[in-house]
Image (cartoon, rainbow, N blue to C red; front, side, top):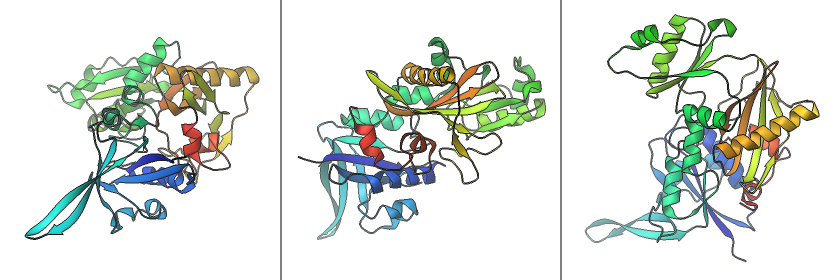
Length: 353
């Protein structure tokens, strides 16, 4: 039987470039080679696309693009091509020429965290190519990435989110003037407020403010990344996480994980200083978290897999976001929840999807 050929896209012109490389290494190095034919395509920090035929360890250590066997490669938006176009250098009389090589693929697995990878742009290109996509499509990607849209869709589905308000840039005013005119509906007395750029990774363009001066500074930072800002009330409680896999006809929720209070959670993976544990919850509450995670997955239109995040306060369960493209490195939250012993994550995500 022919192998399933998958183009794994990694890297990218984003601050999350190293996280993407770790995810790609874990996927490629553990893929079942009897089942999958992997075509790694890396995107450099400057945005150049390269087919990488070397050892996956070079992806992990960041030296992959120095490999002399790399060549330019793009995902063709023309469905007639059926996938990847390699641009091969060559020499001819009178100068250098380039030739094209077409490689048909069965699926694209974008592992591009952060800017351009999570907002739906790369997913749109995959849709245009007519090739199967492993993961959420462009509409779901945009819904998850846009914090305002996420709030609206989750609330419409009856899923509680943390109290928030939005601020759109008014180019006729300075940030200080905008803050002065802002009818703040949230309180600094409840642990401050979180200020986030509306359409960025959770840690980029984000800050906490405990007074109006800090709020003004945080809004200025957020506006440097987006023209819309989300201000959320800080809520005391436990940080819970649940992985969801499947499609609209069959969804499964993982056991519930927890980030121990006071320890840092990395952008897409658990840092060495953080302690990740399996949460101990009453059966009724555990079922509520799993059910809400699946409802959130559906509400945002996710496909194949996602990581759903919660804040459990003394009296409420809040959904704080859905990562349609969570980190997939060996130490990531998603992998710890779905494959704690390690293994072939690609086989897991392509079953019945």
